[in-house]
Image 1: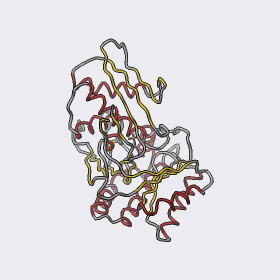
Image 2: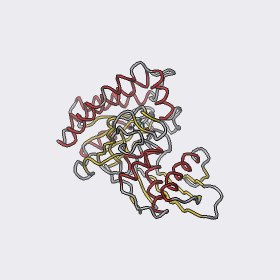
Image 3: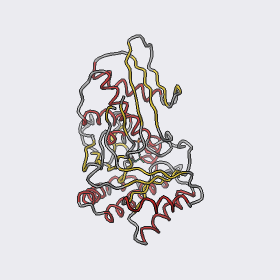
Image 4: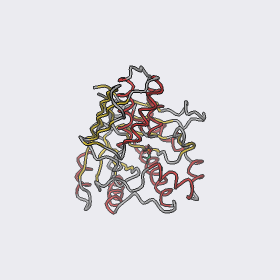
Length: 320
Ligand code: PMV
């Protein structure tokens, strides 16, 4: 069985340069979480007539096709055609803006490749995971992780790599859950809509590399304020892009906005905390461990916040 954790992008991936191999138009940078996980077991069996996928104890027909296509990538590498039974479990809500596809496909690729006897490097696992979900390429690794946009047409240079390990800068991530509903517009469709309709899309791509460089400098020098500044800027830039899409992609609800205001207020009064938000209404707050309790208490007091979770920065995908 393999376990992988979701990761939260500090510098966001939004937009594809090519859809066949799912290649991002921009690089990205993330932190892998610790306390949220997907656990997946894969058994290939020549008696099966088709793949089977169970998520959280139930047959899952909605995600079946993506799972089966991911298995195809591994079957092709191993040169086999057996079908597989996949059993997966998430200890957090699926497709609700908590990066379940990142942990899900990272765990699936590791479990599936081992079940087929493939002995792949982390870079190879990352490349396969990317084809199913761009952010899954980052969950192969722990700590702070960079995803390269790459230049090659076949995507062989579009892989993630670790920057610093989880123990080197042991920050915490507090997550405010403001909705349990699955997201209305998934990231693939959202990115496509943005690239076709936002007047700001080219500017987003052209202005992205300096954000990655600034975030990398902040991470290597453990400069919390600089990381806070560039991460919030890049997050709001991505959501500005989403808002300028036709029809507009509004991933926030009222509580999402209140959480952002709360975190900015805390930082203005000296608390080491900043927020980031992906394609959903949940707010992730990156903070120094000593500030965790204060931030959790403040977020819990906001109307519309359903639950607040806390996580350390975690390791990459592994067999358990
Ligand atoms: O990997 P996908 O297709 O789930 O897209 C991820 C998109 C964002 O979460 C919004 C940004 C990111 O870099 O993770």
